[in-house]
Image (cartoon, rainbow, N blue to C red):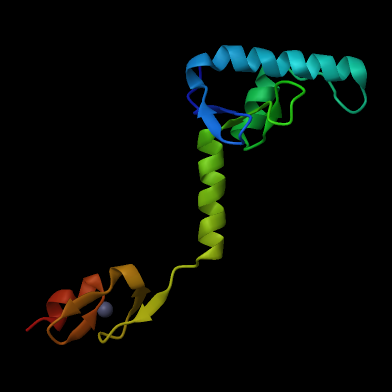
Length: 126
Ligand SMILES: [Zn+2]
């Protein structure tokens, strides 16, 4: 059993932890895939357990039933996706220090002779 922090969606749209019922949800995903395949084999090719897990790990949301919220996803993959999106939206602000180096804002240090990057802190301190 892989710890991908499997999550399932609730009818209120929130996601709940389903990792402790991992096999149950994977089975439900396979059942739903089979049902859809019988309905439309071209649109819904049969997926193996491995394929479903690989898709979850890649950040996909997989249907496990017919309700709009009947879906599972990997919490880990989703967190990674969100983190990537956040990073893209908020590029790290770079600051030029008194020492002459440009570093991420969070790394700027206050030395007695002005702002400093971590490497120059000793040099910039009297
Ligand atoms: Zn420096």
